[in-house]
Length: 188
Image (cartoon, rainbow, N blue to C red; front, side, top):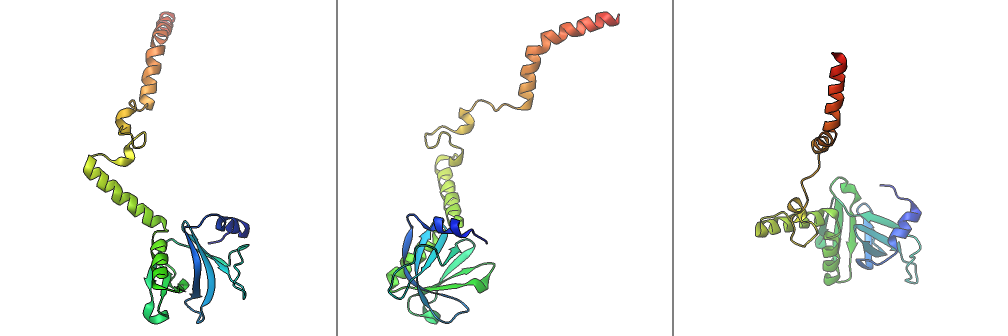
């Protein structure tokens, strides 16, 4: 996926869902590097950290788009507090991250699992099914929102092409009848 650098930098500004220092490496590399990670919606930005420990926030070093992915805990192969992000279609693009404590890893894993559109879509469907079982009505058909009026019952019958034709013919029909009568008289 391609991004405009300026738009990417602007998207990384603003409040984060979660941010902090993590060690990062790509699956094909052997050395971890410390980076500053910032999770905004379904975008995981990472920034370089210089030798003095300062974060270069001007431009993200990279971004990971969190869609079609899975999170795996890799304690045995990559270290004590490691986890990885792998993608369904591109297994070679696996990112391995490690934190400083088990609680930090748990916090990141939970936040990353909840970052995708897929997660929120499945939650919506589950809640919609629950509400439908309790109320007998589909909550997404409610209008106005959450005020108990079912949209289909509240709205007047939807206008259709036939209803417009019907109203046109009833308003214009007397005029058409006289015109038709006049035409018939001329034909005689």
